[in-house]
Length: 200
Image 1 (cartoon, helix red, strand yellow):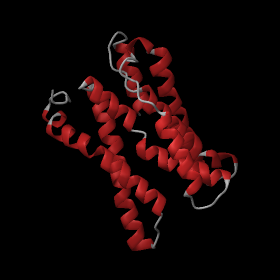
Image 2 (cartoon, rainbow, N blue to C red):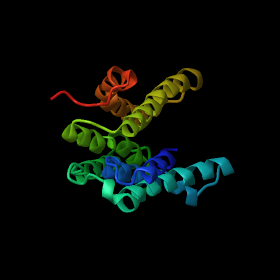
Image 3 (spheres, rainbow, N blue to C red):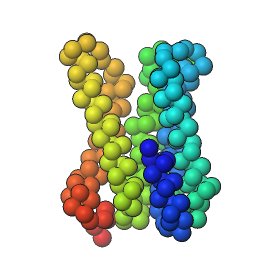
């Protein structure tokens, strides 16, 4: 949904600023690519396969839109987060802590760990600029809400199915904690019709 809204907004406003954080979207493309490599090894259902392909395609489409189609609106001066400081440690951790030491399992674990911190480049960019476009704040809020609801899902599954995945739960908690400050600003400013801006 985000790539569609994104495209419509900047097609109408090609000279506008604030297409979002390129590295944040690139990390999410990497997350979905490494998570859904089982597309080549197993088939669950047509729906499952279709959704995985849609996630991958949309994430790369967004990267393309930011860096190529609407490059004039991309704020590269503030998008300077060093993503290698996330990718390298996460890669090392996925080798050390995983459910099974196999290529697909390590890559799946890598995707879980990376997703938990993939928001940091975007938050870093907001901290540098001191503000964020409304479309970006809504996107980040619902992205964070989606992860927070996963925590509810895990609690439900633990109590009613006895299922517990420590790696996914810890990563989800970390990601939700990273969103807490943003949630506060979103609720106290954006929901009241104000633009998200940080105190000077």
